[in-house]
Image 1 (cartoon, rainbow, N blue to C red):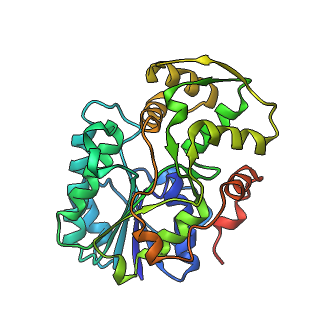
Image 2 (cartoon, rainbow, N blue to C red):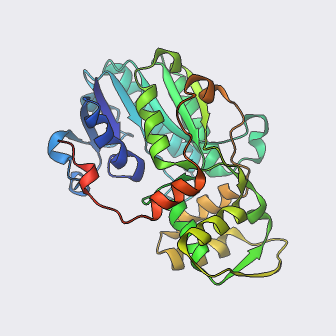
Image 3 (cartoon, rainbow, N blue to C red):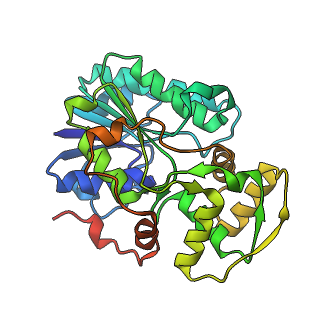
Length: 309
């Protein structure tokens, strides 16, 4: 297949492209700044300069493509106006993809509770609405909804590593929320599997790994895998302002505070699979245990795997 990938300079997109090339697909990448695309596989893809918000740029990138991956979102920007930016970008991408003749769109969203969207964080609600905007067009959409992705390049995992490295921990509502992490390799398997599967057309698929636990328990598992000493637990904190937590986490993890804050706000909600349809469609995928996923994410990273022969 001839595939368009957006977000190729990001974490998931950068891991997905070499997998698609290894599968024999032809790949083209729409990137805002080509100078940021420095991956070993760059010479094996077509690079088109432009943004997803630019319908004309999307048309140029999508013209003749069989399918397109929409792997971008505005989490790194300010919260104010987030919903509008996400919806406008998704609408422009949708229209450009339609004009380019794309026959399938694959979108990566976040796990949300559709029955209780009123309590969903601004970040996750904006991602849910972006998926809905894509589905408002005539091109069949497959939306994979995932929570924390366990991988070396994941911002969420970077925060987990930071939390697991600190000598103290707290007992707060944030740490008691439930999560169902997904191994990076399993997410990539699913992204590859759905793009040409007619059963996945017009499907919204919750995806997660086999382990469900609290965020506090997840940090403890990462801490144990890192070989860190057990943390000292401070007394119960009934409320921890996300802005304060984000500032501290950003300093320790060296991540952008505007990226950390929406991650922490989303972590206040349960992020678990509520619909088992993805498991019914792909019973042989997404079985990596949490401990194996953490071990892979902590292993020394090499660039060789990203090069496709």
